[in-house]
Image (cartoon, rainbow, N blue to C red; front, side):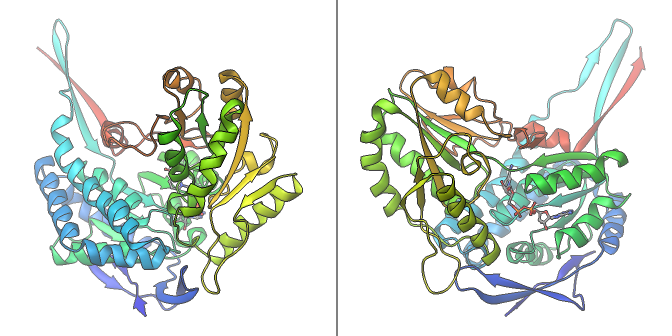
Length: 458
Ligand code: NAD
């Protein structure tokens, strides 16, 4: 049994009350985590540490990011093991997708600081100098689907720009964040700069958001939770970044190269058991190629190996959407039921026959479930893709018209003839109910800093 502790001012601390952490592959208890009720101690620690960390040079902070990347690299198999245990994802996915990306997150921002553009604006009689100051103490709140990947995607730029941090990982997947704190301790990372608190979102998570000494909040999670966070942060004028849910379309036009589109769309639908905000869970296929597409698509879906979904509760939510799909007139072509004796497994599930505006086709299910729809023209495909409250991502598969269709999709990110092909310099984020603000490259650096202008007369 792993005992997870809070990490505050460089020391590991326990709470009297604990929460059980259940492994989704077995349904058994794998760890106990602190049920922290308030974040006051961690926020005070971060506030104290800010005095020193904010005053170090950006080069020194960048060097620390490099050291963290090295230390993660040395312990990558250990980290992949705990990530796989906690999320149920196959160990190769944990190693090659999750932990690999954590290392890249730190390395990327460690090197990226040299790209911060020169900030001097000359006038006839004066010069403006723009300084980038840290925000102060920042809150990082993250979900369970890519636990360390998403935490480090925020942590690296926050630290680079001179902020100190209070982070709260999901109560469903606390293990890799705890392991990261052990790594920080081992490499003697300055105490109090990173503080990690564990517990329920509506308890310790909300106490972080509400605290007056939190200067900025970077939140990734569901749209409903994002609304609560925004309603607390807005009247306090806290800087806020929200990366929220999605219901993304994979659009296969009549001129698509099916030999790349089909495996691409299968991966987009089911990687991480469909539990990635970018997953393409609505598949729109041109009617003229539907039969040819389906003949190859279903066998590839059945061969795609996935892990469990994250929890008993989440499994019940996904299964209830499959029931709803039947009530809405859908036909289950493959999957559709819980599988296995233990753990929370649902095989890849494909549903046809639903109206494109049905609930199952427009609401986020966040599991291994895709719906298939046909269309007759590019305009119709675009209209179906845009007919949801979300606007996070999507993909278009076409030899000729990918870019033209992609431009008309209401969404923050679109891939053409690929999916989840990431350049860490580009903006990442959603429109509509999928969020507010952007992460990535200079967008992350801008979020975690504030520009101050000093105008000096000649
Ligand atoms: P969630 O909203 O339930 O929880 C996210 C985090 O917020 C957790 O750490 C949780 O403890 C905390 N939290 C919950 N209530 C809170 C409150 N009142 N105050 C402060 N913190 C609170 O989301 P989840 O179920 O963990 O994650 C799945 C969701 O995340 C999906 O909707 C998915 O699309 C979304 N997601 C979005 C992105 C993106 O980049 N846009 C990436 C990954 C996941």
